[in-house]
Image (cartoon, rainbow, N blue to C red; front, top):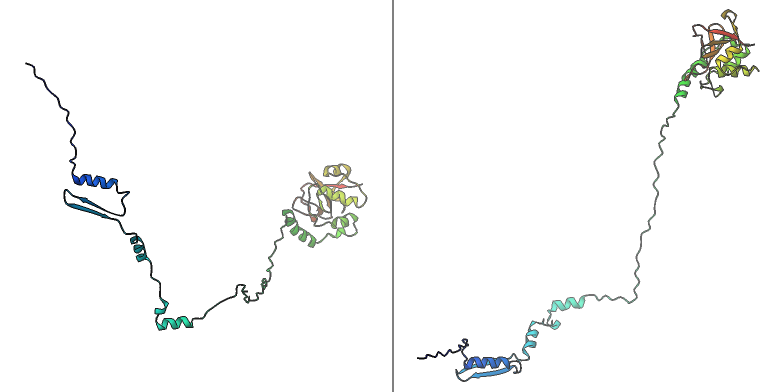
Length: 257
């Protein structure tokens, strides 16, 4: 016995079509070509669908409704009209010239206060400071009587207060041998430049034989004998030419010529 089986194809479920759906589909397809007013009648269900477009004047009416109303100036109150009528009307020509008065400004230079003079401190070197006091002291110191009538001492006394200058041999400044050689040079006597050279060129004498104008030598120093226990010399840096007591413990007396 043969059994045949017929297999049928199943269609997918479809949405049931009704006269209303068909009417809606047709209406949607023809919506673009239908005028602003279209009526669609569904006979099967007795449903009447009416699509009425907005009238052409509706947009203009709505826009007109939003516009501001004009103001009727005739409806203003009597007081408002009176204010408008009495308000001044100001007009100016097209080419108006503006002028104004500028105040005159005079610049006055202030008078400076009187200048206060500042006390200026004079800066002096240490050498000048040192020589100032001794110079005054030695200038006021009594000059030995032996100077009078003695050519060597009279010349030497002219330079009292001259500062000591190492290597100096002029009135701008003397060292010990520079002073002695300069004084003797004023008398036409040429002496060596150093104290040891002067000792070598002079004659050694005893203290008892020494006369004002002779020389006193000690290691590294030389001066002019002023009689008694006095001498005149240019001592050392910071000092000046001056008369003073013989301080050497073993002085050597010399005579020139």
